Length: 608
Ligand code: F6R
Image (cartoon, rainbow, N blue to C red; front, side):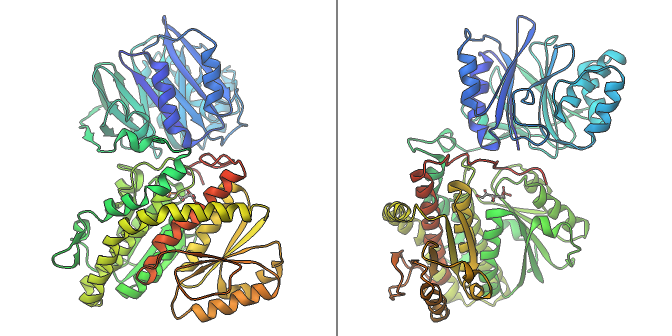
């Protein structure tokens, strides 16, 4: 979950590396550093804290003119987040520097061996073992840099994306990956490696997706991919990505989070594009053409993506008639799930690199069950390892709190539910057409609704800003949204919040209710409304204030009523979700929290 960028070209490397790190800071932000080669010497500058601390340090010197360099932004796993443990790490000679994202599981034993050989370590990290071992092998076995990297990687266990520079090869940067993301950006007279596309998007949109156990060498005018084991060249071709630079920038917004919340109408539009045949009133999912309607579905995901999966269970069961099981990936991977070859496992991941989700995917494949990956990041591990992939096409999501990704996942899951309903003949064509019509109308309706939603969210956030805890209650498909509303509030405002199935409150949590604990109720006009009303009365009878987020015109007797536009059945989720996101956002802004980079978090969780 750290971010890596490497550059070699004709321009000064340090500003390019810093700009790249800014685009990657969502991946980790407890320390950062750069290394570059100037006058055949290797210089490394590191700082504890956010990237601006590193920038302040760099600003104290004259501009650096090096044209080869690399940078790293860290989310600590081994060793405290201080300068000493920040990357890049150097070998004993100070001629080699290395940045790394991932975890080296056998670093203790490698470190022990190297210590016995007289190597002195400077940090507590697992990463330092890599650079010391490469250097040690170069010296002891008289190996060249690529040979030593290759030999080192054959000895390490675990996940890595790494980049190495050497003062003895000033125009060269080597990089490798296994289970952690790393891409090559192909420019003109310059080349890049990075953990994610936005890092070099301002310079090139030509991308080479590296595979596990591949090694790449970039020079200003050339690049070459090799097998990490044999050093045999591997043929690779760049692919053009159509993300634009703006999509990776704040474009006038105060935070990425608000920009991404407000992008949701466009996200829905993009996600539907090419997947709806209006004339025939049918869903077209070309990616699934070779797949028969599965017997059962198993959805596996983490965090917000898990909530999208849980929400989809309700519509998948109703519209497609398929039995659906939804699992948190970290649980799925360690039980012995009963998944059969005629089933389908759906893994949902924005980043496509969440460690637990990937493990779930691999277990399913080992059991011979086909896997459908729903993910946002092109060429990510989930995309490569799944049998079939549906991209959510939401564009880069930079804010650590996921917003538009969930919206896009929900759109795809709606399409899937309709598709299997259509293919199995269960869904009547009138219902199918109605649902598709509603979906297609959503972007415009949401666009119009967002300003008012934001205003009410701001008002309510201020009204309830003294609360130290919240309940979020919903029934049916509003229950997963309640979980998501609570998660968003927790992660960016640090206010405790619990999402609950409204009917479950009386089995314990109601004991917590008092006048200082507001309840956010998610209200849709359906058969469950009278039951939800009773649950809310139980809360109010104990002095708890209720905020009613409702798509119904009916009075639910809430202390604060927040009416949102009404949509067809469960589709009002596409208004409820942004309302919940906006409430969390406005609360965090009002309380002065670090919205885009909340404490202790990182966007891609590539560790267990
Ligand atoms: C919450 C959030 C996380 C992610 C989770 C899964 O706002 O961002 O809960 O949803 O870490 O990430 P992906 O979808 O990348 O697998």
